[in-house]
Every structure is written in structure tokens, then in C-alpha cells.
Amino acid sequence: MTGVLGATGASISSTSSATLAAAVGAAVISLLVAIGTQVALSVREGHARRYARRRAALIDAQDAALALRGRVREYGQLSRANAGQVSSESGAAERRYDDARALLDVTLSRVEDSAVLATARHWRSAAEISFISSLEVSTAQENDAWNAVNAAIGSALRSKDGAPAERSARR
Image 1 (cartoon, rainbow, N blue to C red):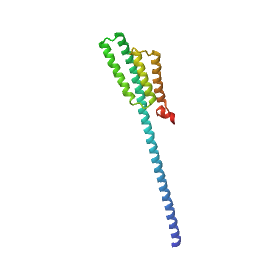
Image 2: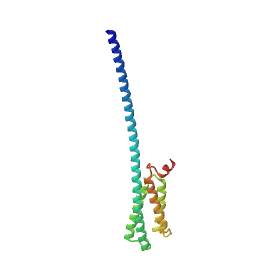
Image 3: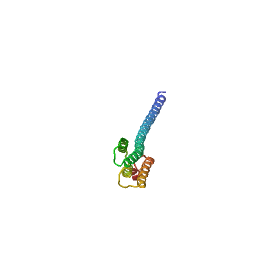
Image 4: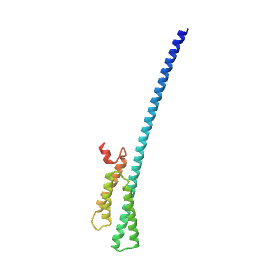
């Protein structure tokens, strides 16, 4: 009887070892899947945060450009109407214009897309010349530059992976 009991005990011990090994293997696989999932979620969340930050910077820049467009037009009209004479109204308009220009500069400092930066700076120069300076930049030229800024920002906002246009094009 001890021979049968010994064989049964060895069989139980072998089965227990196999079950334990399978359980340990399943636990290791579960742990690896959990770690992989956590890493993937972390990477995805990082991309989402970067895209949200980039998107907010683009929208802020677009809003700041729109505000500057109104302020530069207002200041230009007053300065041309007063023909170089200083008035409290033109002084206030100049301060609002300066504030709007500074706001655009600050918001552009957060924009990563070089195409947006270049078109925004080009438009700002065209708008200042068109509305304020005695140099001639036509309304159509300023409007074309304005449309280019909005197209560049729109393109950057619509980019599939949230990367600036020049990086998305390289992929």
C-alpha cells in the first residue's frame, strides 16, 4: 500500500508543481500586460496634454491676432484723422494697440509651429503698414496676409497627430 500511496503522493506533488508554475506564469503575464497598458496610457495622456497645450496656444494666438487687428485699425484711423496731432483719444488708442501687440507677442512665444509664427509675423507687419504707416500696403495685401495666418493656424489645429505642420509633413 505504501507503494501506491507513494506513487499517488508523487503524482499529487507533480500536479501541484505544474499548477503552481502555471499560476506563477499567468501572474507574470498579467503583470506584464498591466505594466504595458499603464505605459501605453501614460504615453497617450502625455500626447493628449501636449496637444491640448499646443491647441490652446494656437487658439490664443488667433484670438490675440484678431484683437490686434481691431486695435491697429482703430489706432491707424485715429492717427491719420488727427494728422500727427496728439490727443487723449489717440493716446488711449495707441496704448490699446501696444497692449494688443504685446499680447500677440506673448501668445506667439507659446506657438511651436514655425509656419504659424512666420505667417503671423508677416501679417502683423503688413497690418501695421497698411493701417498706420504712410507706406503703402493695400487692404487686399493685408487681407491676404490675414487669411494666410488663419489658414496656417487652422491647418495646425487640424493636424492629425497634434505635431506642428513641418513635423507632420516629415512623417
